Length: 266
Image (cartoon, rainbow, N blue to C red; front, top):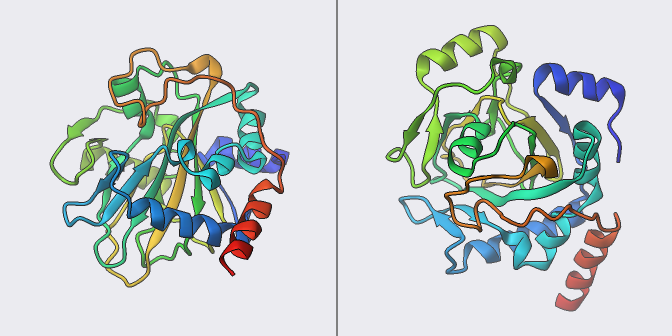
């Protein structure tokens, strides 16, 4: 799994890249079923909206076989190693849920702002990878990106502890307005199995979901090993302290696992 020179050029300029249907329907159906089971569990890694609906589940790759395989899948690891030119480790793994009717907002922010302030990450040499487990549509709270905003660097942010159940370093309206006037807003959509990758300084957010259509997305934050975090303040299940380079699995492992589970259920 290698990116073309054209794809790398687009990413370096725009700050994001979307690869549609990178995973098969069989693979993502299996992952989606596993995600529902995780959301139903009473675990500290599962955070909920103020309504009680699941918001995000951290570190599932450490206690769930399917997501453990996904976290070492070459379709995600290889392209990021190609861009960074070195091995990666898993800084964060989460399954975000925009529940039908009750999924809450994610305010405008940069992820590197949190990684730097809360985790002591030296540079924005970590990449976000998002795998769609449901179809992401214009109506069910898609991720909104401000193209080219990564070139603005690390922006001033405020720690929002009130808006949602998840504390976030957020950007003010004036800053977001200025960046949107320069770069616009895009909202990548697509069928389950699509993969979105975006720069740690890319400004992004998402609105709530008041539709009957859930929107589950797996997020991996893959950090260059040399860029390991220095002063973590968050729980280890949120900001991992294991900086061991990821060794990829065989490309067919996830599909074989999905088929084995389906056959066992029949």
